[in-house]
Image 1 (cartoon, helix red, strand yellow):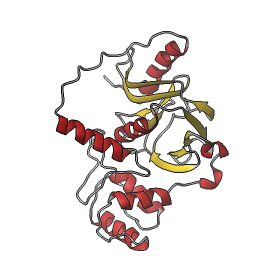
Image 2 (tube, one colour):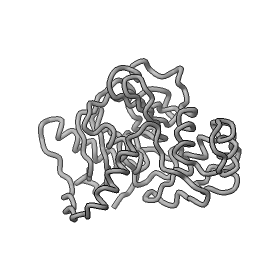
Image 3 (cartoon, helix red, strand yellow):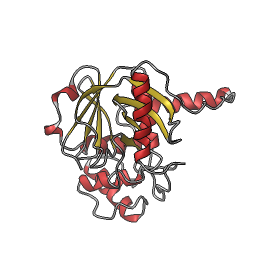
Image 4 (cartoon, one colour):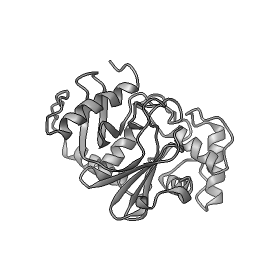
Length: 262
């Protein structure tokens, strides 16, 4: 049973340490794959291609709701970013209601997009680019050659660059005051797609370890990136961690952690 966010990283700390020393991490056995039809396989391939395009989010529509960690429609993220864009003054509640729709229309008008009130992939592309915060304080390493994931602790934001080109950005949360995510320059040294702690039975999917037991990974506890903390890891929404994995799992990935703790 998952008992607290802290388990997600304390478990990883032990397992990553074992692997770093040349051992083998213990994890729950992977489920047996079920044969898929050619049609479903093609659909999955097409969807995977979409998620790896620059500044991609799936369309978010009026009526959508972030109802659980397993059903994130990115409504809270949409509301936060619309607020930072100066077009939304409502509460960030994870429900795409009339106020959110009105704000989306206002943003679309401002940027020459079709005023549908639907956060289409085209709307997201502009919104994500316009709401990367703290660009002036971003370390130079973030825009160096190759793939760079830069985590700003104070802004709860991970920005992904590919050789200096903004590729995507996500809202995340890091370690608590007693287990802060370490600042510094790192590189991913171990990956575990279906990572499960044999100690706490804590699931840490799409884990990319960059400093001891600290990893970028999906969280089964996070609903709002600005509420709560991890035990040192960088928590992503499940679809966001999956997206980062699709983009970087087979490539060298540099990780830079900076900014004041929040």
